[in-house]
Image 1 (tube, rainbow, N blue to C red):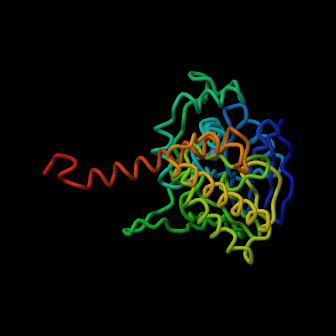
Image 2: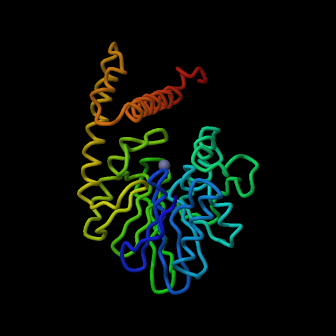
Image 3: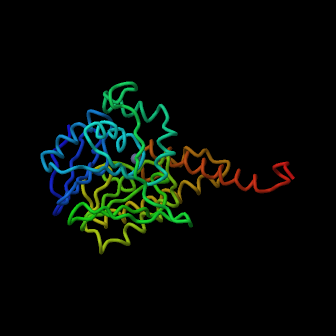
Length: 292
Ligand SMILES: [Zn+2]
C-alpha cells in the first residue's frame, strides 16, 4: 500500500501510503538519512523502513511533523529497527500524552497492527525536541545529514499547536498544515493562526519550489495561497454565523467551502476557542471569579 520512494529533487524522496494519501519523506545525505513521519502503526512503519532501505543503507533519524496517529504511531517499530533520534516540536509530548481513544481507533482502522498491546504499538514520544528560547520562540534547527542539511522550523500554530516544517533544498514538507487530497482538518486546530501560518509559508516561495502536503500530491506555492484564501473565507463565514446568535449554526455548514465533516469541525473548534477565551477573561476578573 506504500509506494516506493520517488525522487522529488536531489536527495529528497517521497513515498505515499494510498490508504490515507499520506506522504512520508526521505532526505538522504552522505552520513545519514532523515524520514519525515513514521506512519499509522507498526506495519506501516515496517513498510516505510523496507522502502527506505531500497534507497539507502545509512543510519536513519526521524522527524514527526505533529502528533496525529498517521504521523507518529510507527515510531516504536522504527526504534525497534534501530532508529535512535526522533525529532519534533516540544509541544508534541503533551499532545501524545493527551492521546485519546479516538486516535488509536483511527490508527487501527488504517493499520490493524496498531491495536493496543500489539508489538511496537505503544506511543513513542520523540526524544530530540527543537530548542525553545527564553522568550518562548522555537528556534530553527539544522540537521546535518552529511553534505545535505534539513531545516526543522516552526512558523506558528495551525493544524495543531506544534506543526513542525522540514525544508531541504527547494522542497518543503509541510505536514498537515497543507493538504492536497482533502479538506484541512480542524479538530485540534487554531484557525486564525493557521491562516497566518499559511501566509508565512507562502512568503517562502523564493526558497521552496515544491511543497509536500501531509496528504496528497506535491504542490506549488500558488496552491497553498488558494488553501489560505479558502480558509480565510471559511473562518469569516463561520464567525459571522456564530455572531448571529439566534441563527441555527448548522445552517452555515452548506455555505462553507468544505465538506460537512470539516465544516462542522471548524465550527466546533471556533466555538471551543471562543469559550476558552471567554473563560480566560472571566478568570482574570477577581470579583467575577469570587476570589477577591
Ligand atoms: Zn494531522
